[in-house]
Length: 51
Image (cartoon, rainbow, N blue to C red; front, side):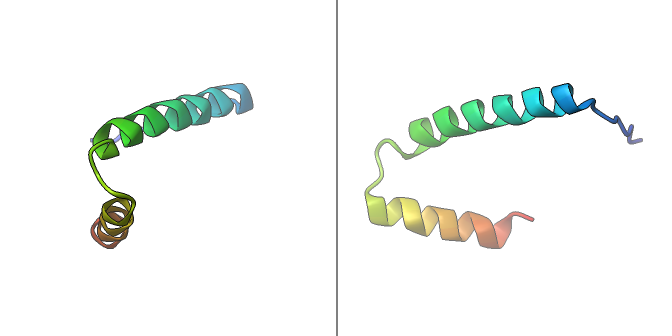
């Protein structure tokens, strides 16, 4: 079952801020041992696979 939740504008802004911070830190951790070309290749692959 799914539950739909409507956020207030402040809640939506907080969610977006968290998403950006966590996403950036996770990105850095996942790509720290990759070359720039490998990062680009990974990004292209993920864009094909993920909705």
